Image (cartoon, rainbow, N blue to C red; front, side):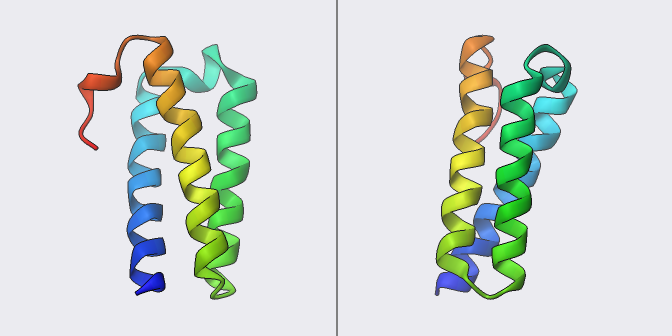
Length: 81
């Protein structure tokens, strides 16, 4: 159960990263975007180590940072959950 939940969270995160890149968040908010990318890397690392609980936590934190960028730009409703 934990593995499938962590895997689903990672897939959702990678999709949101692509969304954020297409909107230019990586250039307008580099510090926040880079922090989200660091958490995404941590999520992938923990998933590989089979620490699915930590992977899920890191990916959701990164996803939240990217969502905040969408909210700042008034774009939150433009992308599916």
